[in-house]
Image (tube, rainbow, N blue to C red; front, side):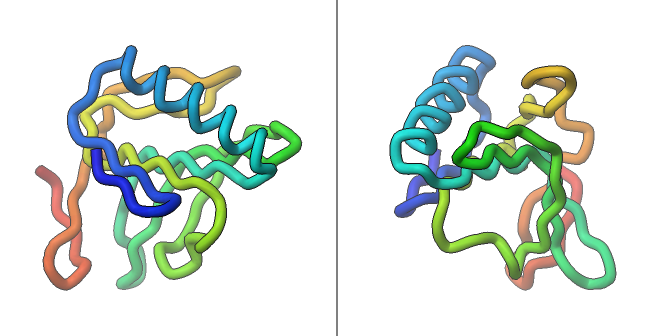
Amino acid sequence: MFLTMNYLKFKQINLDQIQEALSKAFKIGRDKEVTLYILSHMFEKNGKVWFKGIICLPNQLLQTAYWCEQVLPGKGIILDFTNNLTVPVLKGGIHFITNPDRVIFGQNYKTHVE
């Protein structure tokens, strides 16, 4: 795990750890009334890095969303599962799938498949 202020990046954790992290993040987001961003996949399009994941608003509304790297918020909580083999997705609730698009950042923000 890598933690800075409101950003937590996961590397190779199991399903129980993911479920525990999500439960804690939902509780913190609810208590502090901030938005929770769960990043499941990362890809490059038109020279920019994009993320696909789940957003949980302070009113507990869950939805699938896309974000450009440049517009990820400074406030809120961000859980980044893009380097983990298993990722959470929203499908009638939160499900866990094997990450088919596991990519990592290069030095100059180019991406490549591991």
